[in-house]
Length: 369
Image 1 (cartoon, one colour):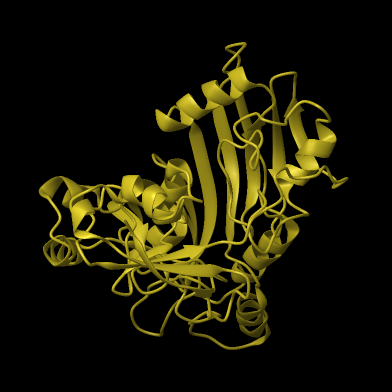
Image 2 (cartoon, rainbow, N blue to C red):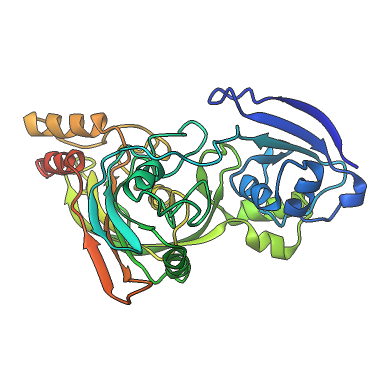
């Protein structure tokens, strides 16, 4: 039924445990949805696992990542499935301190520090927020929302700090998930950008998908790419529209710092508030880079480290050094507000950025203007 030509270790520099399966699709499955066919071609995959692998960008056709589960299988197409190493069936509790802002029998709200991974994944199987929650909420979380990510209804990137909520009961998990899906959540982030977004107040609305050149990155899907992809893979107009997920970020510049050069008067950096209408992977980081104002310290979506600024003197040197040495994307989830899914209480939490980001802002405020 399927022709499994190869089973070998992934030779990417970032992984020595990922396995790749190469499968040539038989003609009889031409036109079948990819997420339906993969579990037939690779019985070790459930349909939900197949869908997750596809959306992660770990299924390739002719060296191009296929990220739509609705992709129509191509006869004699050479599909490469990048199989992650198996995780432990259940994460283990670990005594990791948590900064709890609110907690009741249904949910817990906390201030996540930068550097803490939210849930176990290949390369981070312990020391995560999930491990900490399993210890803190002993006996309450297992199975809530799934074995691998108990209680998790949204996440922050490892190096993003700020307010998060987790569910302690299945009912709360369902309610919170519905609020996120319906966008009935107030979510505001503080971002320090290199350069300034133009205009200073605006709305970014795009589609975001896995990058076709780097499966660890996300990217704005441009119309030309969509058209070429649809034509190349023989996909329908429906599949064409499914390329990428709708993403909306509203932003406004709160502060401007320094000058980028001696003549234009444009700021070298800004403190910008970003409010999400959707919650896509790396959304703010991708969107701000897309409009030419990447986050300071973002080594994935920033073109280079540090700050391009005009000036001289001790304050200038201190500020530019602080930017160059900032080791993470300068992004903080400052506000989270929603209606409690069980009690109906209006909850809203606002947390100031951590010390590293406050120090960065203090240095930028001393830039000559």
